[in-house]
Image 1 (cartoon, helix red, strand yellow):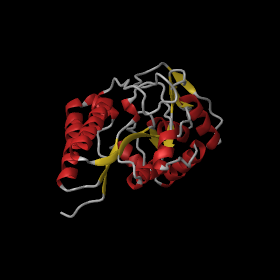
Image 2 (image 1 turned 135 degrees about the vertical axis):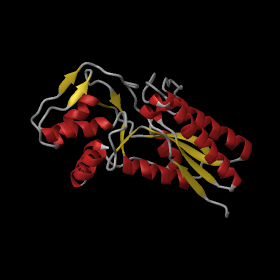
Image 3 (image 1 turned 180 degrees about the horizontal axis):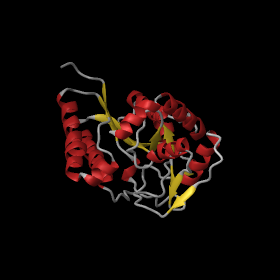
Length: 253
């Protein structure tokens, strides 16, 4: 096999899947990442872009969260991402494998589904509006996250692949905190809905407060976000309308 310039590693089980099936999460997220690292060394891959997650941080203990923020994770998903980061770090030290780990904040946009723990709320709110019912928020709506459009997240991978930084971990976000209540209000505005928000008793929430500092990625990787939340939601809604039948089939499955 010829030498390979770069590889982007994306495969993983998501947060709720890891919660429900920790052994499968170990096999896919940890053992799978080790297999990728081993293959990179065996085939002389010059550069690996590892998809980590802001889940390594857990709830913010300081804002915005820089890359030096402590690991405050309490989920198995976050644990698998921390393990992946440290295996990557060890392979860089021992074998000289270069690359970047990207800690995505809350990525949303076209082709998203209903399984993402913190972004599925967008699709569920839109489903309610289609039925003429109020969007539902569990708790008081103060849970706050850093939403970044999928196109920007994809571009961050390209920037990381092209960069000359030999090794490091970087946030991929906007550095702007949006509460779930603010998100619902924005969706109501975009859809010209006169419905009110329905608040329900709090349910299980893994993280309630998270916003990343984007400064290091801009400085070192030349990555800056370009799509604000309102524009990104409008793109999501437009895509959703054009794929409504396909989405309904996926929900039934």
